[in-house]
Image (cartoon, rainbow, N blue to C red; front, top):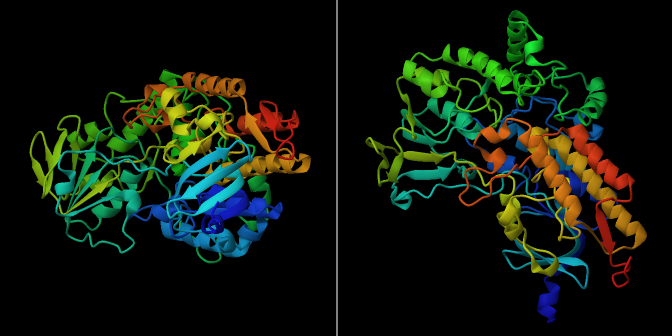
Length: 548
């Protein structure tokens, strides 16, 4: 090896990818444990998805005080201004965390990792950045999250458009002037719902292109004065402990009864009380059979449909946005929160195009042509989502034992992991908020702490014993995958087409991307493995050359 190449290699105990909740927590945790660790981030600041999500209306829909770390040093000195913080407040929170935890000295921004190759002789990962930098690390921790790989439609003529065309997660830092403009928003997922409403306030004309209706819940936003808190500080320590052991990682649970245990009047009163909360409880704090039984699910949908149609003046919009015939099980596609989305369709400058009835044919120099007509726009915004959950991992050339790649493995069969935290054939590689974990059904910071702590314990085990590597076995991976699929197939999730099931990306196998079995059960599975000598794993490389 030449001296120039040697100078470009940085030796580490662990390299972390991603400066969102998972990566930031992991950096803090491992440094506290005495490891030499660096965090790399493709963006120029902390926040993960909240560094990129700065489109109009972007905000989190986990209500305060949930969406933060449990470290008292942080929450004792932080004040939320909103019950549902917007993207600006979230970036301020991450800046605050970075300063309190002194993270910048061990973070490389504007660094995109292109490959990670396991060296079977040295028991290390050789990790290469796009700019040519190389890292050698015993542990590789790609905390890329569920929304790291954008999905952009491949329409005919898309490059010919003369106006501004932008994916919502690449929103320009220099805010474009939307006042009086003709704007198209393509997509009605969580981003499309937030974005459309915000833009309807300033655009001259807004057209929303919908493939599948979203089923958002009404957001009850609260703005806190300087002397107000979402919860008294003295209650927060117990609050965070409770969240770590709840089904969804929130401070609420599913009800202990089923839908038809109540008579109609009691059921409607229950729905009404959940609805008035203005958060996720109508979805995740409701009757225990809502996500599992068609009849129970339809009862929830009927209530939602009645509430939604009451806000829409146009019968056409009522039918497109809240159809008479239930289009898919309620809650089995990501449920957004909204604060004016449906009402905006009552404005004369806002319209809706159903791309099932009139598909998009092409993009022209001046707009979008459907099978019905051409619509002119100044700006086209693609709220078309991501190669969700797996895309952050498969976009990197990750090669494990024998040169096998994560991309090839997932492409053949869908995600296959042990406890949604590691993959057979890829030693010393762990990730948070990844495939087959509870991430999309768990409050983000909660899961990041649970998984980050477990990963640190694994690393401590290897350090204490002098073992070179740990890797899960194929049988344990198969057992976990079957468990994930079993729980999913017992629910109504497979009856909806969406990113929970890997839909929307051409060639991606249809399989459950998420674990629906609850945070406490997931945490118990990780704990069982650890307390039984890391059951499901095998070790190798004592002192890097002697078999364990």
